Picture 1: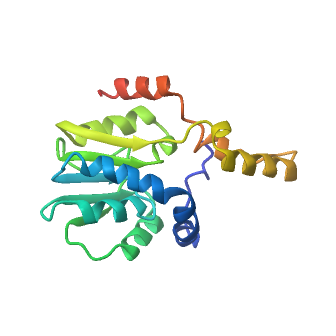
Picture 2: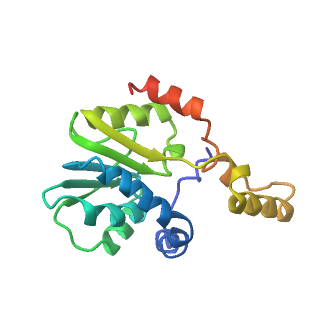
Length: 195
């Protein structure tokens, strides 16, 4: 992954939340929220929460006494998530690196992560941290994009950009969001992390 692939600062959190979230991420956030709340968790950790689309989908559906830790590596994205979330005493906002979580072992019933594990520079380390902070019978819920050819929108954007910049086509979408889709590799990484 290019060093700049994970940088979301300046006005990007607001633009991301206003435009990309409704167009691309909301429906998937609702699906992930269904999976989280079906476990009836008393404690949830959200990794790489971004601008908070999953947080907004999960929080209203958690039990009144549940604990919800919402984390992201990027302070700007976390600030955006906090600013658009209705006040909720159950939510703890934490800047955190998913590869080095500042939480005790065996703490959460569910760890959730929407479309972000592909950004982990070391997938096994990230999965190991998720496993470490989960209770022994806890659930890790995450999703990834399929290969870019399976996503018409992303594929067309990448092809169009390659036509405009033929000498140096921008390959971010193919390389990063759509670059970690092989189920066998994902399963092997999870097993290597202790799942």
